[in-house]
Length: 415
Ligand code: NIG
Ligand code: FE
Image (tube, rainbow, N blue to C red; front, side, top):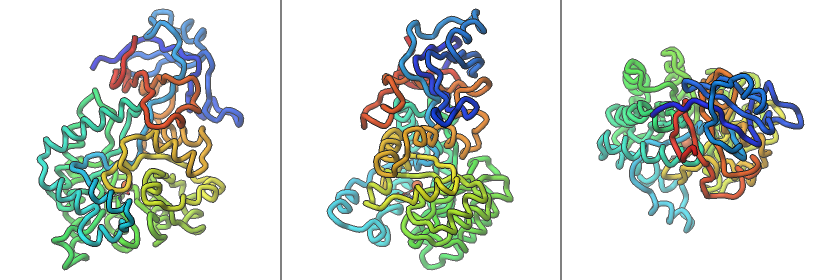
């Protein structure tokens, strides 16, 4: 894919740059703005007249000003490399069956495990590539992608290799690989839980780290998943190996996962439908961002996380899709933003920052993506919408005119 060089004009340029933000304008909007793009990077941002005067050598990428331009969206929590479908289980759940009970009976995560174990790496990679392409058409230019449906070394590795295959393609969103080391106990490990966890820590994780297959390591810490005592050695080893840590915490019960995330200097703590004031204080002290997953709590008919308490404590808020075949059957980060506003009471600017600047920072890309600023990657989305409020309404349709990643077109078209 060829990176474009030129100037994009926009009536509303939503920079998401804290350096431009004010209390009244938290998104740092430049009206009648422009960005100049060269060699895949943003080389100038500001009022159109200034940018054009600064770079008279560059031509216009599109002749007319585009109505709304934002940074490419960043989806900081997905289970994207899955295959198969759990539509039957969904129908059962909608008719009243319980998610944890289905999982205990061998469905849920283990159902996706069976599908992943049966699939080849090429099948997973092509399913993932198609999925990432659809995400791009929704304005998403970076996607965190977790394994966690293999549940043995070969199958986890197969999922992560499929992510690496996708990450090598410049015509798709940037993929950030996460080894979801503790997700569910596979059936063959039921007899010896401790041995499974020890093997993940001592064998599987070091091998995956040595092959550079993951940038983050995740663990599902909950009453029907893994305890803090099980997760701690795995995640500590991840830190010792130089990897970042993200955690699924408090989806069903507060079992101390937020405190563990703070102790480990995690990059994010995700879900948080159930977290107490001590956990929130620990996150705030340690500067751990909260990744909110409103599609999952909506699917599971759960009450929202304590957003006001998180906000009041100064915990950074990220919004992600949680795209997975069980609890979040969607690929749409814009849908998650819509629900974050409708169900969780986020303001529109909070939701947008949670899917741009804050999400990028939680993935260690805070100096590269999520902001329209000179020197950053040219990850840029133009929307067929006149105002950023419309990003969270209407629902369910793609309104991206085009998406650029590193200046190259990954969705739509530039006229
Ligand atoms: O984030 N909580 C655990 N993991 C996923 C769902 C897994 C599944 O049902 O496949 C989640 O909700
Ligand atoms: Fe998840």
